[in-house]
Image (cartoon, rainbow, N blue to C red; front, side, top):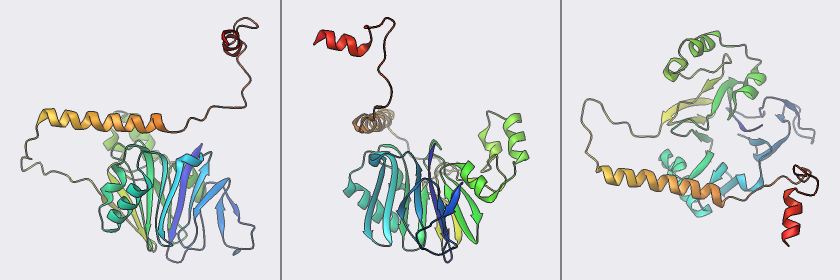
Length: 264
């Protein structure tokens, strides 16, 4: 299991996670941090990567101490493209944080404003909950539920059983009372304790017909996007397990390693 965990408050002195413990490094006694975490940036709005993230899956681009972007996952953008996207997000164009090929979660810090962008399909969800006069957020609902000791949301579970093929019935709820999910195509914007859910994708009005698009060009655009996304995944470093014993094969001496050795 792995997730991204962050925290934003009016005067942040705390971190957040599902399982937390004292920092133990001489810092303030009220400070807590996720267990088994990697600090991406510190106070006043700290951000952690929790779990078995590999080095190539955690990228942080910093312009100055209060203008930076963290991208976790497989992202095909170069560092320069990340900086351009960060500057675009500083001007309000949040859509640029989701336009790169791959599968990732982007968190931008611009001054005391934190922006966490969800993807259009909801494949990489983002959750949040009020906590300690601020907002805690994560890419998994369970650590936030553990943080606030949330009870089960019976209404969410009932809607899930009654309408399993209708995600609209669930709205922004989760199985845990008090933990909310950012809708697909939206971003969570935090500023000094306040929070806002904003859409970054333009929505066409149903009352006015939109401009006609050439079907062939539309198909080409989808194909090119899929090719770039798959290429970004294939070009990512491979991490083969090193602790597993060699496969002995069905008969001793007939495993893959033995066959490769026999072929020279």
